[in-house]
Amino acid sequence: MKKLFLSLVLLNCLLISACSSVATNPDTITEQTLLQDRRTREAILIDKDIETEAYSELNSDDALLNQCHFTITAYNGAVLITGEVPNEALGKKIIATVQVIPNVKLIHDNLITARPSDANSRANDQLITDTVKTALSQIRTMPDFDPAMIKVITENGTVYLMGLVQRDEGTVVINVTKLQPGINQIVTVFEYID
Image (cartoon, rainbow, N blue to C red; front, side):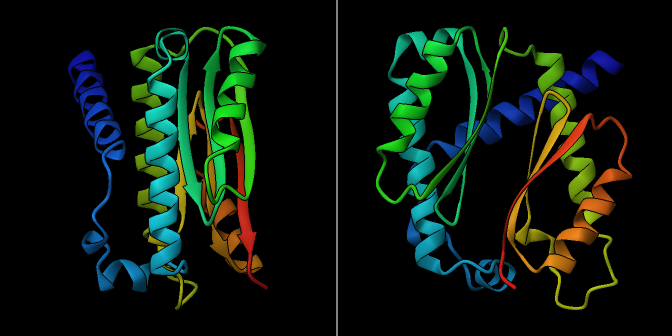
């Protein structure tokens, strides 16, 4: 039963990942999205373009595609790169490729030198991400807080939190995240607006 559950979570991850590499139509950014996000429509589109171009460039390189596992997440021009590379040279190649993409302001390099994570590890990471997102949706102590403005990325049990937040919001998000099971470490990549 556990293997079936992990297989379903992995399938969900793969389907979500496949969707993220498709060019985004500007019409898909709804008014609801803009209400839930502190970025402008233009910033959201730029971030989607950065991710799309990064995946397109990186996946066209056979060595990177076949030997590495990486996740590219852009938020307000800051790019978080997580995953595993078999050697430092391939890690540097990933960073160099992403650095030259238009509108990239900053890169957070969180690649580690290791074998690519397996399906069970990635399924566990997705479960942690879902658990954190659910916990963030339960925050009621801040009236203007919307959990949709926090991006949650998990890689090998490390949870990365991104978003445009006020310091008190960031503190609450970190404290709620700390309470969730299975997390090895929390790394904040917040951009503070106060």
